[in-house]
Image (cartoon, rainbow over all chains, first blue to last red; front, side, top):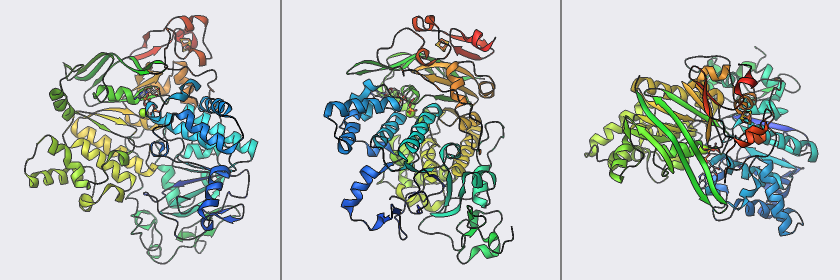
Length: 289
Length: 320
Ligand SMILES: Nc1ncnc2c1ncn2[C@@H]1O[C@H](COP(=O)(O)OP(=O)(O)OP(=O)(O)O)[C@@H](O)[C@H]1O
Ligand code: SF4
Ligand SMILES: [Mg+2]
């Protein structure tokens, strides 16, 4: 698991898609404590060998940066076929056919399977990564910004593929993204992360129609509105905190328009404001809001 | 207003094992100084290649590039070096484009060294600190290394490095796609402010349609190496005439709960850019396609003032 803050919601519930958005420490931090449970096993405690099995077959991951994850000296077709061969009993011929099929599914003509990664555009490389991740029908798919390099029509096609996995194979999906439109399209639950901590968590409806944390509100406000023309975009003032030097108290307080003296010290505990909706903000401590 | 860049019938073909790949195929447009031309289109349609050919990062196959009134289609290495001062590029992933072993100060100063602009170290440092201030990088980042910065600050470094030679034109290849939305807004605001102050011209490549609408004066939509529609930014969001543009705009995911799904789904085989034929390249996926579309290539036509569309049946489809 690459990033901290990914808790257990989603795992174990076969048809849940969880969207994680917001500020995950960048560069990503190590998981310092806590556990990541998958089918009742703590992934962080597993030996590397078991982890590899889980990662390849039951869990697939799509990373944001395809340039570093693709092998530059193998054709894209070979790279997809390799994964297919690892997880099924197909012949080489069949695996190659399957690879071409997967390419078509992500909107790339199958005939380009003999190209090398450097002959592909940024978004095409990202789609090869997606094809590889989907080729083995995983039980859990963790996708980190899987569609940032794609136009919206191809993006829609890829999201549809992920939805199909969910429907047909009961694949759970953890989607890490900044794109609130994508979350709205495919996720059931949403965790908003700030500086490595979940600051708000709830159903899609909770987060989109009843957002409570000042960071979540600011996040939605800073989107350029396609229907509206404003000269300047609203921004959340200030900078992302330095992960090695996090502020005391609520980690968002230096940028929060509602911050009070009490927000600057001590730990802010999560508060359950409904059965499904959690907020980590000092203003909810005594039920003020 | 003065035109700063014009490309005419620009083409870039790549030779591949299976034949000639038409990455950019006959693109023409012009941009005025101080304006932003947004470039959108399907992933793989040739946007980055177009930007790179204009900057001579790729050798063009055919066509003409005119910059500041001079034909720069063919340049000597010495001319190219001069040209680079005026034309810069900002990439999507500033991390991959920054040398990990150089400090931020060194990275930003590098172009000055290459061009021997400020021979004394003190002067160079002063210039670097000035530009860091302009892009909102704190003093203390001067001696840090790229991995110690977050994505937003790294992109500020990318912008600082592009700006230090005082260019006239910047190709921005998805400069904010990898950033958190709150940081994205800060960087976009910064870029627009810099544009106003310095009268910069941007070619802005992005997949984010609300971003492109926000920042662009004109927008061009590309499909498989060609321009299929071009118009003013608000005009194109109000009226999409090309069937591909219609599908594109309809697919924007709304950040809303239970937003109605009005997406036009594109079906049909994807056309390969290799060994293309004379036809409308969108025809295999176009719901309006007629036999003629597979036989003849449509021309880019001015449908209303400054609104260009490349489709045989644009009038019928749109009731014009
Ligand atoms: N060096 C190369 N050799 C061969 N083909 C290439 C090369 N670079 C790009 N291509 C091809 O040219 C076409 C256009 O690629 P380009 O990178 O310009 O697309 P793009 O519009 O920027 O896509 P994206 O939105 O995914 O970044 C693609 O089909 C790509 O595979
Ligand atoms: S020319 Fe024909 S195929 Fe092409 S976009 Fe127009 S109607 Fe569709
Ligand atoms: Mg590109």
